[in-house]
Image 1: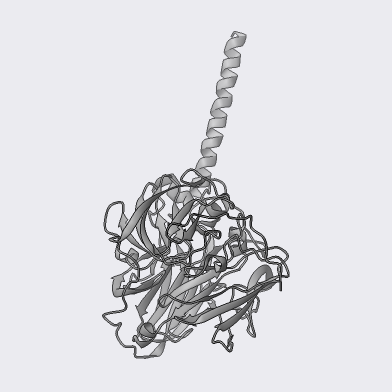
Image 2: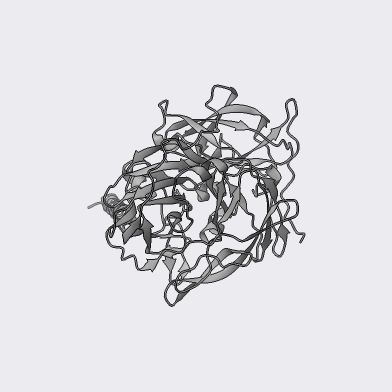
Length: 516
């Protein structure tokens, strides 16, 4: 045998071995990517309900809340204290379980028309922010990456609540670090009320028949949170189990026929397809920005990171049912779907009905009127192409204004996912109406007021929104993908609201609030 033939045989053998090794590795990654806790969860921990934040009313009628960002620890599992970050409210503890501990933050609550002020102290070892997700408020109070709060400093945003009753939330928004700040535990709900919703016969006893359900996926490395991204997971962090309100394997005993669940996807990358283990129907009554005009009956509701939904489920005496996240095809099929979590399923929360239930009135036929434009008065359109490296071909720059909008006008924004990776789209300050999904009428769950919308691979959505100000040519709001790893990579842009005929100003480099 010639030397050349021996070399060719050896090279061929090496190539085959490498190919088999790579193929085996790929098969291993694929086969081990699927995660499921469905049907195996014991539900051994009573659901923690975040306390309502205490507040005081100042002489001018302003409702004042106090929040402190600080480090702590919580025993999610007995005997294993996990380092956490959390929001401490004035005069009250954050949600905990039987083992105690500190995680998430209290639920803030205010009424439409109220002046609100939040005194935020940063007791962490690094700077952060607090963004009011879904809130209509001045750009300087928005809590984006331009409103950093230095360690030891205090920031006090103030605004007047001027939007319908809704389920909003608050969380950090530091550029490049949002994913880990949220994962560590900095998040909480902000509920808004109004006179119209107060008159409706809906479940509204907080923590009794009206439950906050803050859903996060987690993975532990010993006692600590594991924040790592597994191989080929370009969506971001995906955990191997879920918790609600910081409670692993939670159950809640309920004593009413109708129970309202305020679902919040507070995960950083995972998309949930919520339903019940027995496939029972429920009523969708509200989306991100408030109540629907009429309830919508369904047995599944899909929420991407940052989205909320208010659902009402009917219980019978003595029965149990499990809120579950089911596999879905929102990520696309095959390889991409498997690695992005589309094949995963989780038992999220068990509801246990008491043997005798308090009767609940039927859900009203009319719930509210949407206060979002329908596209008929849009003065212009804009296009936003989404890929992980940026929006419209540009990565985020904090000193660049990408779009300028005129106060008091409505616009139609077309958002397309030009990628095989799932994305979503969140706009600060406004609530919008989804006009179309790939040229078709949106499904019932997308017909309410929204501030965040899922955009599956190679799909297009059209959104109508109005910019009511106030104008501030020098301070931007954000629009971005709310899969937080993508946001941190720079998948975000900035817009300012100006008066008619006014030009955008100059965005200065972010500076931390250092005053007390």
